[in-house]
Length: 346
Ligand SMILES: [Zn+2]
Image (cartoon, rainbow, N blue to C red; front, side, top):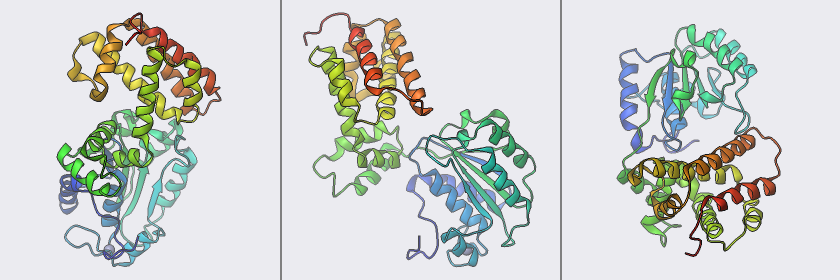
């Protein structure tokens, strides 16, 4: 983490400046709340923002409202050994934050700050707290202690337990405008994406719901190509050019969690189309023709039914419940095939 900027955490992103000024002002006026929920869609760099805020709160000689990068505190933080800073997150992606993790933090926070300044806890994934963990945290939020700060990060602040939420102040990191996001993304991808250009960047950003870092991740994991592949296969099934069994064999090799998440989005768009007919409300405007063609030839009950089945299977995957992917995909794809009542010729 040591750069020409000393021991500072990484730079803020251009779209975070507004909220940075906001917290800066609160710090200056000594009214920064003890518990802050930092919200916003995935891919806005909330953790970077929180780390920067933590560094500033812990810094012993801030410069113009920012961590100095030189003092003992900044150095300890950069070497991940600051005794008054804790980062709490699930041990594994998709797992919950456990009550033991909260308790550990609790006892650390009960003692005086070892560096004599503030104490900061970042909770990365606030809805990942299981109920016991959330209840344990609640006690901490009620009596945070002097100069102690909790920074809770989540993309869905409304999903956080109301009892926890009511003790926190919300700070949303806004999505950058398309122009700012595209400029940032294109700069990162200048070497690799030269041939694919602007169209790909726009599509990635759409898939990422406007979060530039998420868009970059999608590009690096080739998710946009996988999504295209999945769409081609779903279309082939509708046209009778590929069977559910064949496609299921192929889906095997893809991250099913991601595939089902996309599929659920598309089915949701189909429901919207059936109910309102208004294409402007769709989340997946790049595949509007496919969606309209399917919507025209299917019943809303069947779409709902399939949506429900895919959602159940996605939950099973998230809960790490054993499933037979081939059989599950075959069954779901078969329902997809049956969705369209007529006109398989095109
Ligand atoms: Zn410092």
